Image 1 (cartoon, rainbow over the protein chains, first blue to last red):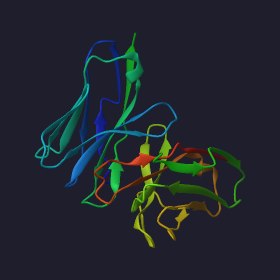
Image 2 (spheres, rainbow over the protein chains, first blue to last red):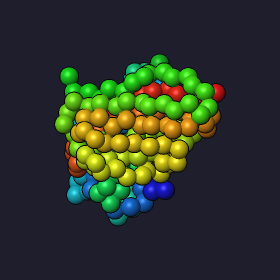
Image 3 (tube, each protein chain N blue to C red):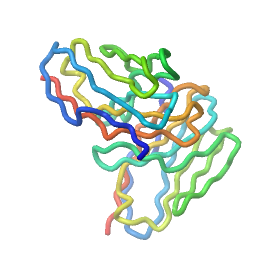
Image 4 (cartoon, rainbow over the protein chains, first blue to last red):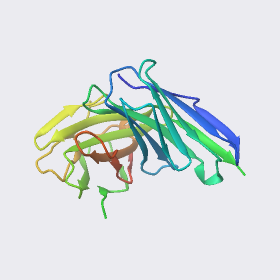
Length: 110
Length: 113
């Protein structure tokens, strides 16, 4: 399997704090994406970063990509209780199918 | 509204009884894929399709079949379901490069008894 890894598996923080999740992968990629999933629901696309980009922002989200280390991070700033969800990274596999990591479960406590 | 529609949302069936989970998208996406999600294992890809009549195995294809006769539809077929196929299934679609990310369906919770 070419499945990547996220860490930590679970993260619990207080409202207002920043949350950082990391993702590692094994293959060459064209892009890497982050998704959010509320319990039992479909995944929602958050942000995409291409292999020639190093950092991307979208609202309170900041994604970095280090292709030399085959890793990415997702930072959520000023977290809210509504950010409680599981977060997944996904990458294309040599430009073909997309592979998801096992996810990070984020709990934001009020 | 751009969406991926899966049916049914919930299904309880018995071992060996053939079933089909339908998936349809209205975004003219070439790429479609099926995943199953199990606790602690994340999303594992079952099959994917790059375009009409083009399908390929993902990481866990055993016990599943798919077809892509039309661009918008990508049904998942379980010819003889077994209890280890009890899972939450998701269909997703995207443009070929995935440039706008995947659009996911709402999921199908399948229980095989």
